[in-house]
Length: 137
Image 1 (spheres, helix red, strand yellow):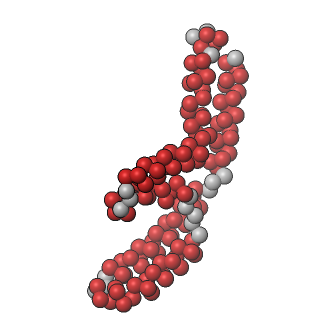
Image 2 (tube, helix red, strand yellow):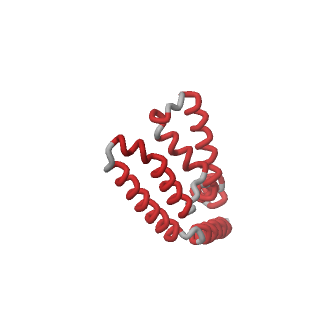
Image 3 (cartoon, helix red, strand yellow):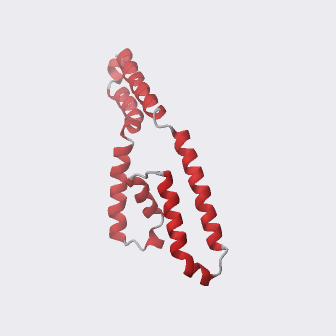
């Protein structure tokens, strides 16, 4: 029984390692860095203008901002937008009911997104507890 549990955990770890290795975080991180540098330049230029000039050139800066985002094609998942809304509830004027609905959605999306990781954390201790008599504990 111990060998079987060890085998299952090993297979889970191999799957997790392969899945994480295929995500290419380094390339995505580099894209995000370059995108943020360009957006920061746009923001700093915009902030350096007088309020009157800002109003006159707002569309120009908005278009430039959109072009930068489009050029890097970084895709955010629904959970990213939801997390932003939950963190900035007061600035976005989100009511209590909508906040609770978003909180439930966030919980469901978190479980859907991280089910493999959750199963790796929960299943081995749970299986050990349930099978403790057969394992001799």
